[in-house]
Length: 480
Image (tube, rainbow, N blue to C red; front, top):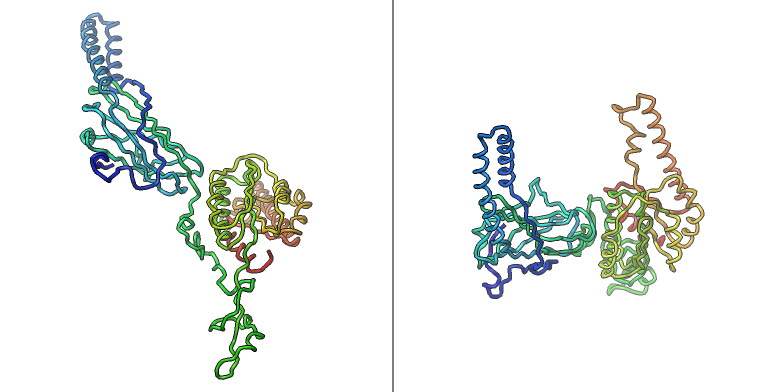
């Protein structure tokens, strides 16, 4: 929290300037609620106990009566003073309208007094959304007690605090609340200013916003290098041979027509560029197969690979099935990434049935050219039969990558460590069931690979790098 000069006093300086923000003007609508204070409850309890004693001992009646006569004027005067002073504050909030998930968001509250006198105590509460965490380092920002001395007529008090947006999607601040206390602490006045702020929380991709090329280690340091110029598949031009060029790239016909001044052949090599103008379709399961943590990892990987594909000149389309049936038509150019982010940033998974078959059928209706289809779900043995009819159709016209997450818990049961080896009959049955389940999954994946499909089984932590590497491998191989 810090204090600054009033924006009205300094020419050319605005206290609220700086970043693009979703902040409303100083609120005019206020909600006021009168509440008894702590001192009121203590006095009431004391008077109640005194009343009980008076009920049994008449000698205490006079003390009880005098105490009541003394308390009532104090209660009334304290209330009138609080109501007279009332709310003499104005507040404005500043926060960026676009936030990154799990990145610290900076919030500023600009507070000014509008009257000569203020209530005895002022506590501040900013009503931030439930999707954000305000307890950083186990310290809560609110309630915060404001010092009256810092709220001068000519000054603006800037209260600063940090939040961490934990969930993707749209967020709203419902207002800012002041708890005003009376002089004797008998009464409190809760005043809510309708300072409404709103914005969006996006997946956290700082490297995308900064325009950094994805060349090894946006996450775990295990991304392969993107293909260098000259090693692609599409012919671009001829150029002179340079040290380090592959002998396979030498164009011997062009070399025979070019000679140096000394009569020796001048080596000419073919210069290739990476294939572009291809199409990538991402289909993500938003149903019960992908719980929240896996879904977030899958969506992040999908958006990261979309960025890479757009940078490589490919068109990107996206779809979801299950809880949300969504179709985003293919677009090219890095500018299409903004539209893609705005369409997918608030997509969430829900525990509802989902059908990969319906998703594939829908994709066939929309696609009119050969595409690289990336289907992200959690495939099981029963999917082999349900998809057996449509997969050959997909494989004839498109290149399909089936992405599934590893069953970590099943692997722990199936491949127990020596110290946790199964001993009881129940543990032996669990181990056998887990091993059988994993074996059936791997058998299904081998069957799909035999049909010519691409299969990727990975963990949520490594799906981003695994997907990008798979995409680059496909680009390098020329399968698309």
